[in-house]
Length: 510
Image: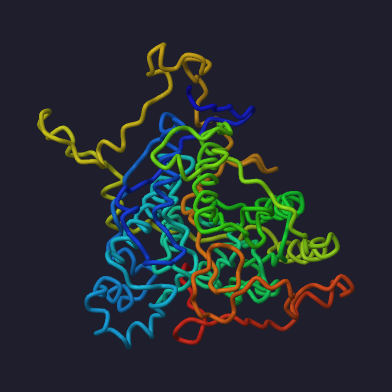
C-alpha cells in the first residue's frame, strides 16, 4: 500500500532543494557517544519511501573546502581539523586543548570529511536560494550551531550555519536566523553579535543547561544592539504554550526587520513530550524521534502532511513497536507559567520595537567566490559525457521526477495530473506584509547539550559542569513579580564559556 500523503490546503507550491550525501552515515563519533550521523540516513530513508523525492530536487552537494571554511573559521583551526586523525592525535595534545577538541567533540576517522559534507550542503543551499533556483533548501546534515571561530563545542566543529548565512549576505541586505533547538544557538549569535545585517532569534532552555548562554538581556552590542533575541524557557513547555510565544514574536520580527532570507535551525532535541523540555527517551528512542520529525518536516516543506503509518524501509524495525510517525507529548509538568511567558514575551517584543524598522545597507558589486562557477552551470560538461559511460552520482542526484511524469498506474489516486500554478506567484512566507521572501530551512540539524544528568538521551558521559536537567531556575529568570522596567537593561551576566581568545568572535559584515 502506498504511503499516505495529505496535501496542505492553501499552501502554495514551493520549489524545494534537498541535500543528502550517503557518505554521512559512515562517520561515527565513537562508542557511547550520543551524536549519531546515521540518523540522517534514517531520515533520508523515510523521505524516499514516503515518495517525497517526487516533490523536490535532491542534490549531493560539493563538500566545502578549507578555503571556504576560512570565510568564518580561522586558518589555523581549519588546518588543524584537516590534519588531525585518531592515529596522530597524540601529536596534537596542545592543539586539542586550544581548540576544545576531545571528550564531547572527539577525534574520529573522517572528521574533516564529515565537516566538509555538512558545510557544503548549507553553503550550496544558500547559493541556490540566493540565485532563485529554489524557495526552500533543506540540509539535515547541517545545523551545527555551537561551533565557534577557533573552537569546537557541543559536538560541532564547523559552523555550517554561519557559512551559509555569509553566502546569503552576498545577495540579501538582511538575514533572519531562527533557532528552535533546545540548546541556545551560541555559535551563530556570537558570530553576528555586532552587526545589524543578521538578526538571531533563539528559543531555548536556560538555567544550569548547556551552553549556559542566551540570557534574555543578551541583545547584541554596537551596530548589533537589539538584533540578538533570546527567549529563555523552563522545563516542560507544552505545544500550546510554545505556540503562544513563538508565533507573535516571529510575526513581529518579520514585520520589523523585513529579512530577505530566513534560516531555520530545526534541532529536534526539543521534541518528545513537550517539544522544548528535557527528553525522557533512550538513545534508540531519541534516534527514532529525530528521523521521524525531520521526515515529517520535509513533507511539510513540499506541501504535504505525511500519514501516520511508517512505510517499509531499511530501518523499519527501529520504529517499533507501534511503527507510527508521531512523537507524542508526555505528562511532564510545565514549569513555564503563563505569567512568566507573558513577561518574557513583552520584554522580547520591546527589544524588537527598539530596532525601529529594517536597517538600510549599502550594497556593492558581489565578489566572486568558487561556488559561483558551479552555480552558474552545474552540468556544463554533461553533454560531453559519452552516453554509454557511467554518470557521476552528483549528476544523477539532480534529476527530479516532476509532477505529471508518472504513468497512470503509478500515480493513481494521487489527485490531479498537473499543477498549473506558477511558483513565482507563491508567497513564500506568511506574514502581514505580503512580501515574497527567499525562505530556507537551509541548515537544520540537531546538536546537543552535554552532561550526565540530563534525561534527554543526548548526554554522553562528558564532564562539562554547566549542563544538567535541573528544574532549578537561574538568577536571571523573570520573576512574575518583577516590574517590566527593571528587567530591561539589566547588567549582562554570561555564565557560559567564552571563545578561546576570551572575547566574543564577530563576523565583519559591513
